[in-house]
Length: 430
Image (tube, rainbow, N blue to C red; front, side, top):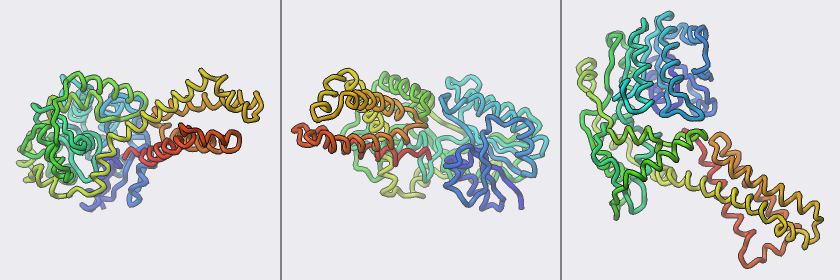
């Protein structure tokens, strides 16, 4: 049985490639650093590795006795969790060298429109990696899909669904941009075809539907696919709103968030995404499905609609919790004497009151800051729930009169706990 290795195997494209290669008769192994993400696919073997940290000898060992390696790893923009030069250039350099030694065919998943002169680091580093592979001695095929649409949404496709699902409103953005899409199944099928030696080494091909759409028409068609009613208001978003949104998203990227509203995404969508489907069709006889067929192949479900609505609500919930807890801690520390008075008048000792107020204020600030850092967000949300429960219990034991306060300060803790619980439950990358 031929063997295949898929780098980034639990990603949107990587997972589809693993399924297609398995169906084509390959013994498939996935590679990725996130064991939790890989656990969603127990039917495959996994190697939990950080590709950016592998030495040259480790690459050769990884590819030993492997017929095909699919590089579906990648990142959109530099951030706390990603370094584009390492992922798109260094990894490909080591991969190409090792593949030449082991005579393994490399199928590189790149992107339509890559160029050394591109405006974005994403396209420039992708182009540099493609050039390294093309100039190497490795047997290789480079596939460049356009905007990938599949059963699951991630990145640009998730943003598309989120915009399309906005209640009553659908902003007009990138009306002049031209976008071509490709079904995820077509990308995976192209990878399976590229394993065939009849596809010559050195092939570079766009994988895309033949037709193009404006981003505005794409959001309208996605809205219809979701089953949402026609929007009542279609405002034009000024360019400055997108620029400021991108700056905020870029900043959050250094806190570990891979927001699709970062400057790279907006730059790509603004300029458009296009490719030429003819070379791949002439080589393999395969034609990618047009947008209408892609959408019709997997009708939207209630889960799709819910996920699209929650997509933009989740960052709002995190921002709300962060602001609430940070303000709560700061105000408590500024008004320490007033807060201590509430406890001392109910019989608590001054020492305990001081510890409770200052300690609680510091804890509030730490949790409010931690939830903004991606790798700590779930733990911070759980911490908010536990600390809130401690506040409720402490008030019941030492200041039960607070429960009868006409402004309901203790009762209002419960919605915050619920919001924190929702954030904790929804904090999944994929």
